[in-house]
Image 1 (cartoon, rainbow, N blue to C red):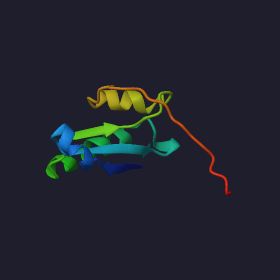
Image 2: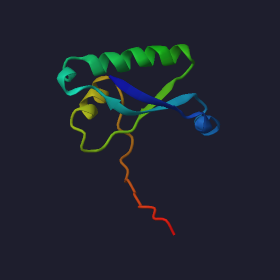
Image 3: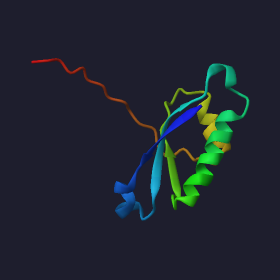
Image 4: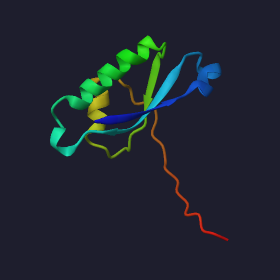
Length: 92
């Protein structure tokens, strides 16, 4: 199981709090729906509090039917939906 934690300190002047972004939550297929992802995020949030982080923001695909209910069960609130843009970069 893993999750990537990205520091969002550049938002501190605007948000007035220390925050992190959570992306790429991964639980192996065989370990899903057993509470491991929930335990990982609960333990992570406890550790973040010790580091004076008071806000965690998770970025999840809108069609991720497993992670959205998980975050909801942990008290995360949906605040926005976004678009993903992609462009192939070709040598000139």
